[in-house]
Length: 243
Ligand SMILES: [Zn+2]
Image (cartoon, rainbow, N blue to C red; front, side, top):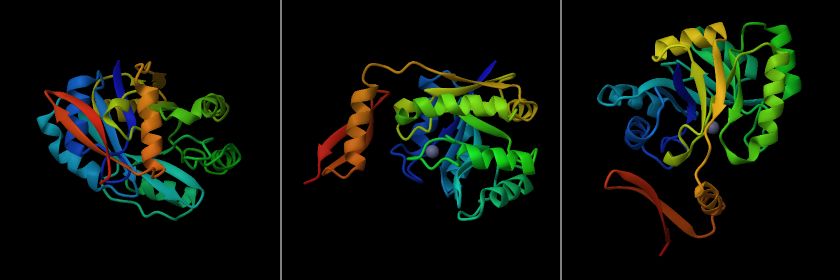
C-alpha cells in the first residue's frame, strides 16, 4: 500500500513552508510516498515542486485548491492553472478537460468554505462521473464533525473518500492521508479512478495543539510574526515579536 497526502499549502499561498522545505520534510520525516501541492488559486508552487521532485524521495502531484463560486475544489493532476470564480460544475469540467481529477475538500467546513452537502448531492445526481472524490478526512483542527458527516455523504454518493492534511506548516504534513494500491503517483491516479483508496488519520504529537493556538493567534494578527527555520535537520517554527 502507498500513502499520499493530497492537500498541502506552501508559501505560494497561505502556507508558511517553502516548496523546498516541504519536499525535504515529506521525504526525510514522513512515511508518505506521494504528496499533492494544492495552493489556493495558483499552480506555480506545484509546478516548482514537480521540477524539484527528482532530487527527493517523495513523488509530487501538481494541484490547486480553486475558489469556485460555491466553495473550494481540489484539482489534482493538472499542469495548467484553472481560473477562480467559476461555478463548481464549470470548474470541475475545466479540470476534467485538463485531464485532472476534481475533488470536493472539507465539504461541510463553513470556515474553510466547503461546497456543502445539498449542492454536492445535486451535482452528483445531475453530473454523475464529474466529481472524482470527497475529502472525508481533512487534517485541519476544526473539522472533526465535518469529517464524520463527509464520510457519511461519500458513501451515500458512492464517491471515493480521500484524506488530506490541509497542512499549512511542515509538522502537519501527513496528519491525514490516503491509502492506495501501489506506491507511485501514476498508481495513485489509477486507484483514485477505481475508487480503490481509503482515508486515514495519523495521531498528532502533544505539541500540536499548542502550535495550532499560536498559529491561530498569528493569523488573527495579534502582533506576532513567524519564521520557519531549519536547524540540524529538524524543522521548527520560531515565534518572535514584530519590532
Ligand atoms: Zn486547503
